[in-house]
Amino acid sequence: MSEFNRAKNLLRFFKGDAYRFGPGALSHAGPAAAELGTKAALIGSSFPDSESFLRTIRESLHSASVQVCAEIAGPAPNCPLEDLARISRQLQKADPDVVVSFGGGSTIDAAKAAEVLRTLGGQIEDYFGMNLVTTARQKQKKKLTGHVAIQTAASSAAHLTKYSNITHIQSGQKKLIVDEAIVPARPLFDYSVTYNSPMDLTIDGAIDGISHCLEVLYSAAGKDTYENVAEVAEAGIGLIVKHLPAVVRNPGHEEGRQGLCYGTDLGGYAIMIGGTNGGHLTSFSLVDVLSHGRACGMMNPYYTVFFAPQIEPPLRLVGALYKQEGFITADLERLSGRDLGMAVAEGMLSFSKKVGLPTMLSEVKGFGRGHIRRALEAAKNPQLKMKLQNMPVPLTAEMVDDYMAPVLEAAACGDLNLIKNVS
Image 1 (cartoon, one colour):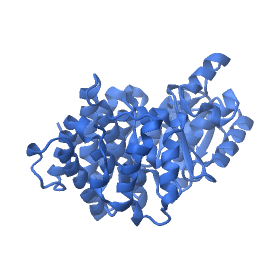
Image 2 (cartoon, helix red, strand yellow; image 1 turned 45 degrees about the horizontal axis):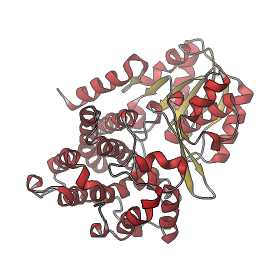
Image 3 (cartoon, helix red, strand yellow; image 1 turned 30 degrees about the vertical axis):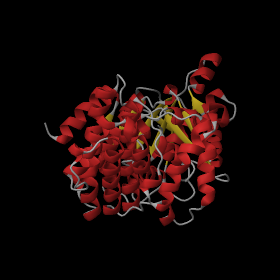
């Protein structure tokens, strides 16, 4: 079975007929929306060529007898609180019976959270954490408006998932809603929309996709979900590690672009089976100096060493993928425990160098000691507790300074040896 067919089969098993994906899928926006309502608010992001894609969406909606009652500009990157408030107000005024979002993760996350505020009220802080939207919805006996989420970037897979990331720009801290109630009812991703994506966005998104697969795989070690996660993660990571260097060399490589779309979509599948952990948790505190994908990609090799004694089967799977593409030369069969983790981490860092990413925080413009303090403090916040507890080596808030701090110090200077394992 070809790698693309394998990915298609996994995605169809995951989402069934509700998910329209692949080149040409944009024309299905109207039929998807018509399954949910007849009066749409279109929340769209702006980027080169976006107007031609939006025109296709409008025409598809019109052909399906879905009226566009409002067009709302999407948010700035990372979905700042101020943009979320604006979009929620505009949704309230438009009063649609279906929400259509068109953009990357920030726009789709904004649409999810704005609809929560429009329908359930309150402040966004009321919903940060796990299942608080569902609790409020059940208490108020209300339903959220159906959402057609149209992805434009091979990255976060926000169109497929229960997550919404919102950023408080002044404090530089990102927080997270995690709730099945906000999963878009009709996801759509036309892979051809990504063919001219800027290289920075392409790399960021691909690394985010690897991080989704990797972190969920690590967390699943020893659990009943491991075999399922391993199948998805192996396919997703393999596609991205193979195709990202080819796209970096040749940005017009359409097969490579499709490989990244399949791989990051599988990342979305992974995070609906299990949760992310260390890399994502720390990334929320680096939002002012690194994109989300780069922040996760920066941290995951270091967390790999920290987790290593507890995740040997995942390390052998991941190591084989990086070794197959030439990023690891060590004989992994002869290694175990921390030594195996070190070898896999070094392969991941080699891959990052190959695609032009920094490998230590000190290389990042604007990074300072304050970011380490912020990340350690955030890890102790009850609203982000799920990330801390979802680690293969679960930490309590009281353990953060003893064990997470050395991981961050190692990432700051690029020295894997500084990392301390839990005995």
